[in-house]
Image (cartoon, rainbow, N blue to C red):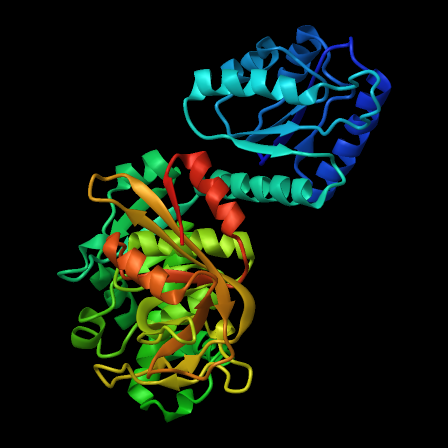
Length: 445
């Protein structure tokens, strides 16, 4: 079944139906502009019988439950007993206030519906008040639809953990049952040596096309020793074929020390290109980091940056995020391109070595796991500044909407993991709604 958004306009026939019909038609037009996946009743659902008939025909992943007029709690209860998907409750603004008849009484109906939702669900639901033409209404409903679609996609996502986290990096380890229960994500695991052995078995000729493909992304790889270039091509082919053959949507990969000691060439640039090709790929085997990347990629339609917060400038209000050299090539500054260098610690290449491009609106994000085993979302809005590479490796400088010092102090004292993603779009509203939909704590900074 494909993703589906169901518009469910409930009401009764004793209010001003001409006004309600006008709002009904405008609501369908607005929702149709936001999604191609909507299903709509042919008429307003003004009786329980009409409601049941429509509900029999749908299989929704998000319900937009609108009080087209007042409706008692029986209407919402009928919806809730059938479906467990997220609900967005929408109250219409009274079209006219003139001392005469109350035309819709949608707001009172919303209280009845919300009371029923809390009784059935006991948790979060989305809510918006206003008419179909209002920008806030359009924005909020659009964000809810995009969040619900990511939830739907995660239920079909197969991730891979390639190798284990190094000692002291246990924050990135994940249990397959936890991922499936909370996010709907299937996790498979293989050893890094399996892909290393696969790479070693390729001949130079077998990898030539892959190498030429990779070179299209990279600036200066000709400065890398020939053996490392050939080994990089083997590794790139091994990862790419593994992802394709197994239907993998995102990966977390072990990197050091194995790829230096057992293979002699880092995996950094392989992950960089996979990210640019739309396969979210984290390093240091951080599964929740890879999941964060996947969510950010789906919401923004672009590759995201993955790295550590390594520097803060309180006066400038900025935090620098950095990693050894696996940022997506597509994020590189246009004046430099995706430059190739060596790993800053091991001094072996190829590893990416560039500053990331500027962006007026970004979102810093992390799927975090608390000590009690429950999950939470870190969300901070900001701007990626026009800055050159800050340190050897890949970096981006983010001016946070909240004070950088508050963000750093707050996230350190709250015990957040040291890996974050920088999403090249403001998707804070979508992330907050997604957190509500899957029942995790949302932490805005």
